[in-house]
Length: 111
Image 1 (cartoon, rainbow, N blue to C red):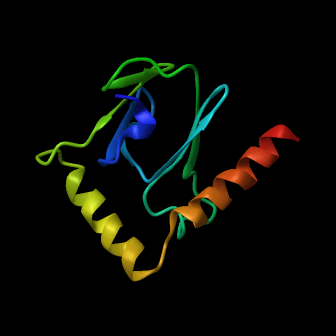
Image 2: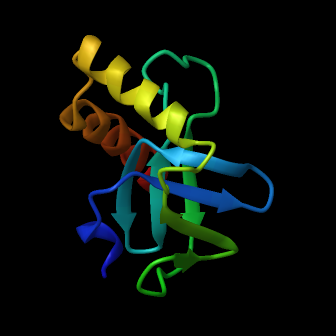
Image 3: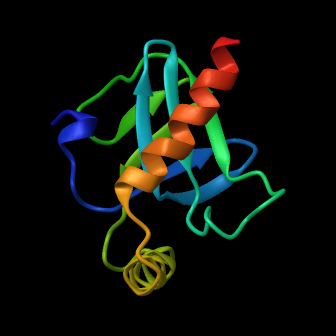
């Protein structure tokens, strides 16, 4: 399965940042950009991440020295994911808003 066809919650395992939920994911020619959960409130914090490389695999997926996989129901991060979904609904956090944040970052990267 292609990563961007996946609709279940995803997490990334990074050798430095550990395991974290991917709140929003954007494919770039040279890698991916993703947002952490809680990104709308995290002003001044590091919530936007870039991973350079080519996506490989059919799930789990590899990119650079990271691995992306579906969050399983018994995963310790599932509780965080469910809380994030509640927060998004209560605060009208949309994918369009996330896309705008990603676009601004991409524009900064290009300049």
